[in-house]
Image (tube, rainbow, N blue to C red; front, side, top):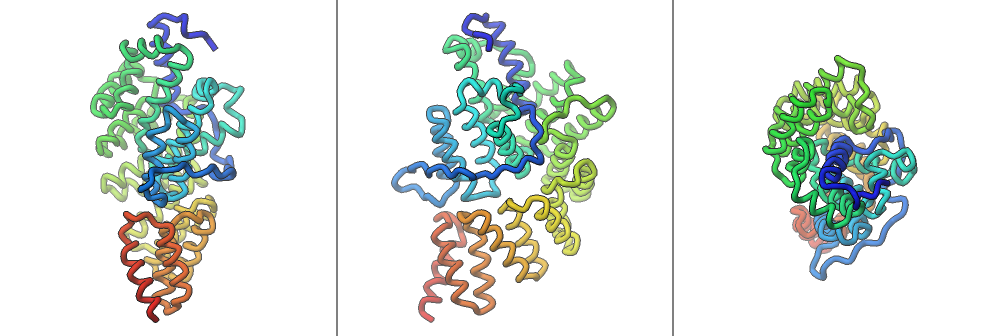
Length: 402
């Protein structure tokens, strides 16, 4: 690595610009087929404040945010537990990836620039799998912790002087756009990215970055337009830019579908999801999204067919099983729904919500012993803030009287 302590302010600014671009693009790897358990080695739960709710994913997430700069490994453990308590939530997967990168010290730069020395290792492929799980849940996830990454990397290689130069000097358009986005100035970021697109028309990935800035402002129609423009540009030339599994044409089409769905345009969303599957038939979240759209128009046959395909493709995702179970309930196929809730619990024992639905199903079927088991498990695992908890506590009291 170049000793940046001896590089000028202009040199550091150039380094920051390159690193910003690398982080906007993502680490160079293709691990879409890489099977990696999210909790093969279970870290200890971090100790929260005395009054904190240890069933509340947000409590661990906020703890992680408070510790990520000072103790990134501890923060990674906190984000891990947040993801287990609420597996459908995107942010903890992304935040854990950032914390784990920070905990690797100097290897962080090699990873972010896609160094062949580290990019194909199991450890760093796992980092990419965390990013994939995050973006599968929310492709427009606000990745503001990337700002911390670049600050830590600049400090690590250039010391406090480098960090001072980074903070005081203005970089190029891409650096300014990235800095605005990661500091929550989304309108300014969109403006900067727009200027950068005009200056660097061949850097088509800038459209994806601008789409994220629009989505952060809830301008999902503009986000969809940016992503569509990017794909049109890429299809006109030989595609050499897409080298990331979460930056594939299929993922971009999926993101377009999510943008249209959030904007209330169901038909455009459906078209985009179908195009995503044309690019990659194994994109399980596109099948699930089509299932949700089909359920909205009461086409239960297609909804369940799409969800069944999604679950077959991604069998170890408890959030996906939970969504499938809810779709089965809406289709009045309670027995099959119960099986999917049970499978979600088997995959993720700390996931509270499936216990609530199983308790209700057994209760309605007049099977109080089984209902009692799941209601009790729900109360033990559900955060105090969960609205269903009060009702379940009262129902448990009623069942105890019988």
